[in-house]
Every structure is written in C-alpha cells, then in structure tokens.
Image (cartoon, rainbow, N blue to C red; front, side, top):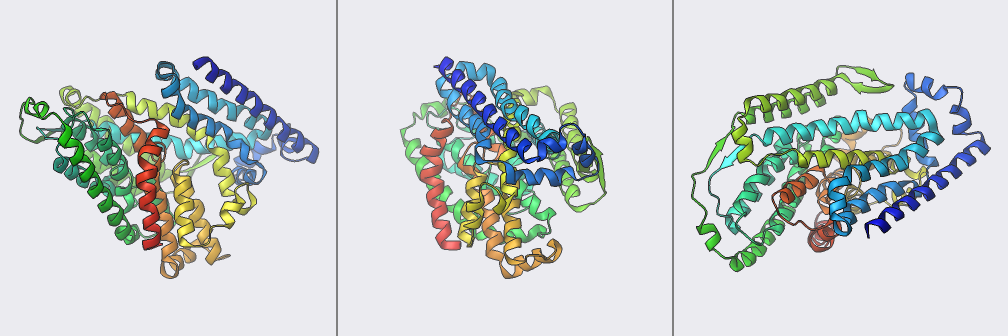
Length: 502
C-alpha cells in the first residue's frame, strides 16, 4: 500500500508541474509576469522598494483553483498515511511535508520568479516563524508547570478541568491553556479505558471555543485588534461562546458518565493518593511575560525593518525576543525532575513544526486566491456572502482547513468593503461595530469556533493530539475525528447557533 501511495504522490507532482508549466506558457504569450521578471531583475527591485507584496496580491487573480492541489495533498497525507502506512509516516513525515512544499514551491518560483520568492519569504517571516516561536514558548513554559495530586478522572472532575481550561483560554491563549492542562487531564484519566472522547472535547473547548473572548485567546481576534477592533469588544460574543460551551459541557458530562459506568473502578483504587499541588509555579511569571509580549506588539508602534525585502515591524521582533527569553528562562530555572514528572518531551512541537512548515508553504495559493476577492477563483464564494449567517459559515468553513487568521481578515475586509466602500479603515471599523455588529460577531465566532472542526483548524489541536498519542492514547484519524466527532456534534450545534444568533 505504501508503494502505491508514493507512486500516486509522484504522479500528482508531475501532473501539477505540467499544469504550472501551462501557466508559464500563457504568461509568455501575453508578455505578462514571466517575461517581465525573467531577466531584468525588476521583481527584486520592486520588492526592495516595498511593492513586491502588492504584486503578490495580484497573483490571486491569475492562480487557478487547482494550484491548491499540494495543500490538499499534504492534508490527505496527514489524514491517510497514519492509517495506510503508520510506520512509514512515523519515521518520514518531515520528508512528506517537504515533498508537498517543494511540489508547490519549485514551479511557483520558476513561473513567478521574484514575486513568488517574496510571497514565500513573507509567509515564513511574517507568519510561520512568529507562529512557531509562540507555540514553542508556550509549550516549553507550560511543560515546566506540574500540577500534581490524585485526580479521580470522574465525569465531575473532568468537566471541572474543561470548564477551567475554557475560562483560561481567552486570557493565556488557547495554546497556553491547552499545554497547561492537557497533561493533568491525561494523568487523571490514565487508568480509564474510555478516554478518547475526553481529549476530543478538550480540543473543542480549551483549544478553540474558549479563546473567543479576547484578542489574547486566538490569532484571528488579535488581527481584529490590530485593525481597530477594541480589545474588549470580543466580549460581545460571550452569549454565543457560553451557549456553545454549555451545550458541549452538558453533552460531555452525559457521554462521560455513560462511559464511566463501564469502567473497572479497581484501576482508580490502585492509584496511590497524593494531595493536589503545583510545582514549577514560577513558570506562571513567564506565561505572564508571554501575554505582556503579545499585548506589547499590538499596542506599541515602533516602525518597520526590512528583512530580505520583507517588512516586519520592530514591535513584533521585540515580542518574539521576549517570548524566546521567557522560554529559555523556563528551561534554565525549572528542575529536570518537574519536566520528567510532566512527561515532557519535544516530539509534539517538532511534529507541529515540520508539518506546519509544509502547510504554510502550500497554503500560499489558497490565501492569495482569497485575498483576490471577487477577482479570484473563489469569487462565487465571496459574492454569495451576504448575511451574517453566510459570514459565520464562510469564515468558519475555511478556518477549519486554512489558517483562521487570514481567513478572518479576508471576510473582515469583505464586510468593510460591502458597507463602507472607499472609507478609510480607521473610520469604517467603528461604524461596522455600531451599525452592523452582527456581521463582525459572525466572522469572529465562525473563525474561532470552527477551528475545532479539524485537527489543523487551530495549532493547539494538533499539539494536543500529538501529546495524547505520545501518552499511548489511540486518537481518531483526521477523517475519523471529523466524521465521528466534529460533524455530528459541532456542526449540528453550529447550525443551532446560526438560527439563534445569526
């Protein structure tokens, strides 16, 4: 089976390269991008003067929808390889990720030259590197906090942990809350046979929906904050967040109670009782430092620096520096015994780093097409987005598979253009909040809530899955997660949310 899958990947790569070659031929015939940038070095000059990104945005009107094929390929690899060739995947998933990244990058650079290089540099310097630094710092710091003590793993105890995690997620981020509490809930349920559903509901609530109340909770809301949405405005979607959370918590308690009755209770009786306590508590100071760093980058404006033609803000670089220092301090000051008790290891963050490096590369055409709006291959989707319910499902559905931050920004700008065309963002955003608040609420809720629909909808999802598997829990496959849990549970709840709120 492994041989056939690899052959299929190879054929796909060849077909993709041939198709991209056809774009190059068309560009040459029209005297377009390829002829313009092939030998003159104009693209590099444009980038040096700051116009490269504008040209990159226009690529969205040129790229056909099939250019997202490598992105689909890496998603299918994540979904199918663990089922069809688990040993191969375990040892070679970085190579698979690199394969799909190169299938896209090589012909993309060949056809679009400097503009393509600028787009690739932009997504790694502006998005991927800060993304990994944030995840790594939170993963490292939370791994130094050991919540010790005997937790029974009963429906009541598990539900309380989920409630605490959901409440914390908006203030220390979905990643911070997930990394802080995933290990305690795993230890609490170590004696149980039925525990996969607990990890899935943890992903639903702590890794996603709980982050809906502040810009600290989830990246799309932070983008809204950077574009003029007041810090505490997101508290307006508290009713939606409480509604979804309450349904999920009640449903979880019922499901866990049914499973709990089937468990052999001698397992918990054999566990040696230990009083509750926290070791490595000083790491909460470093978590606070991460929060301060993120807030600093949103509140302070210090200009820009040019990194290989990419304009990055000084405040973001300082924020990344703060995060790195906080994580290094955590490593330096936390006893090895605490991390060992926490079963801390680097495998989960390495898996996220390798796989998302490929995902960020292959996602470029999808994001460019979205940025093109009605001029791109997804024009029919953009044009059909009219009512708040449409914005909720459009932003949410795409956030389930694409990066939810740019997806949020796409529909945020779409709403501004719909109601306030030609008006500067600084004046348009307050009007959107006052006169069409339900549209912004729909975009915000959709982008955050529906990140729980897939493992890749939000970065903590994949990290929680990896940590659970490292602890010996057989988590559902990519499609198993969707068809067994997110579609029958979350999608049904989101349909109800649509009728109640949007």
